[in-house]
Image (cartoon, rainbow, N blue to C red):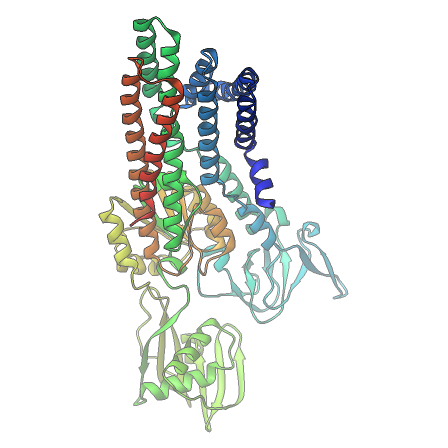
Length: 607
């Protein structure tokens, strides 16, 4: 019952048309056809007036829709007394608009999602080291703030503590944590590591980095150009053709009823209904494949994609570093080196330590208990294992322990954990954020679908970005990009439409500003998913190519429906010119055309 009430509130004209039809039928059966005629005709004139007012608004904005034919058909059938034909036309017109509204009814709540994640409180430290929680909007430049472990930094600031480890992936897309030293810049929206730190506020909340992301999403969403309804592109020529045929019928016969009879079969219900049904079917097909497309207009854009821009971390790559090589030195085996490094790293909170421990567990390597283990923030871990002194961590940290590191520097896109045992170099464990297995194949599939240009837009450093880009077959690389840089670059790309694929909060503005934004939503941020036009619900980048396939298939089916509808309507109009199709019969024949095009539109559910 609640669903019925919602439908009536959302689509009142459809509900009223059904009610008017029932009442008019009762009046007709009760022997009062005049009452039925006045009721239906009055309702038809009201609907025509509403449509006419909307048409005037569209004309002022330079937009001509196909609805003008429906208005003429309603008025002409009323004038010649064919009121049942009027009711059928109103039902099909309002039903088509309801279907179209349903196809595009997806609320965009990206800004609300971003605001929900924004810090709301800050811990103010006064001159007596007392801590007071205050609203983030009350923070002033120069104040000292405490950021507890795993908390989001409330405003941009400078680090007052000796060291800090910050996760800036929500801002830059960089999957590895950033080590910050005293005096270094700390951005709002980044997540503090395992140790509480103090910062000096360098900006108020409204001017800080995360709020800039929120503003960029808002501006990008509001500045995006509207998409013209597919059927409206055929409005002017089809309208002119229908009016010419109807006028010829009136002129030849001298009977205005002939004009109404032609206009009834010219009612553009196939154009109003079939295309939205095709797009709804395409959206359902995508949902079954784990691809959520938020509007029919997006499917139409997907069919014409010229350029695809990719984020790197979490999109082309898995988003978390993995061990790619274990390189022992001085006679150690791989298993012994990995056991040594993992045994020490179990006392570290660094993200690379977690990856090393996962690799040791995967290989079934047991860990050795350590004595007097000590983590040196941002550098590594010192520990005693089975009576030997072990140091693991950065290259410089191991060198300071007296070890002579002979390994070459890591290649682009790689990081390394070095180890020394009793002052001697023991080897390195190399980690990298691996390219997704099907990333290169996805780019090749998109090329086969007609995509002409590919771009990488990432916050990562250029060597890492270029290394990943070369692996997947992308030549145009833009690295070291903040969210505002990404928005500017995507807006300036020459080949339109542009599809942007990303997954993090830092991608939300650029997803909103692209012609089609695609979010890897399985592990990506809610903000990115809600800013995007398409959300991939499974952790498979290949689904982005599938989205283009579905867009092309759906648009092809929608165009076929339009042309089938136009062709059948023209045939019926040419027959109606000779007066062999009464208005009510014409309305029913038009319903047969509707059924044909709708059944054809359902083909978008396949493949």
